[in-house]
Length: 299
Image (cartoon, rainbow, N blue to C red):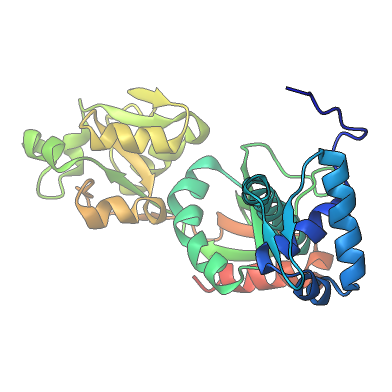
């Protein structure tokens, strides 16, 4: 069998387009109309392609053309290629038209509060793409490439800031843990003595704050088990390892599902020290950020 050697890595794209249209439409004339060229130009491109391939693609009649068996095989293969090119082009055009936002939050806030809500923003503003990152570090908008960030603080004076939720501290545990420890049933805070407290390393002072405000004495606010994040501490509480001190807004789903319970009625509201969406004031001039801000403070 004679091996065909191509003079180019691929045949001419114009020749391939002419062949694909003519083969699909079974007509040089119709292909010419679709491609906005003359039928003679389509015929010439197909002829050049056949010469380069070394075999005919069409059987030509007096007023009609029909694909050869090799032409049918080739048409099926390159049609997939054209479909792939079309999809790739559409994808990259859509990506270029996406307006991107860069938002940063704490890991637990992102997982427990923001991510469950983001679907509604994507549904309302599908043209805006949110890139969400997490960090415990302070934000410096002069250095960090961010449009906005969710931060726990008092209202910052130099930035735009919108309060997102109340910062309420509450002890939580699993229903099974509460059933095993009758000393905390009936809202008895003194029953905390001797029980395992669960801490987040990022929020080591929360138990101290709550115990002090609730007037509970004789409990070491730093004793117990510590975890890298509040999310891990909450998960440990769900599994019955002890009592976690939680920000109520971040465990609402677990409380509603019955995975966690609040054994005590006392709630410590830290007032203005809470979570804010912070941003440079000039970022409100960006329509996509203004839309995100309006959505976020309304959910």
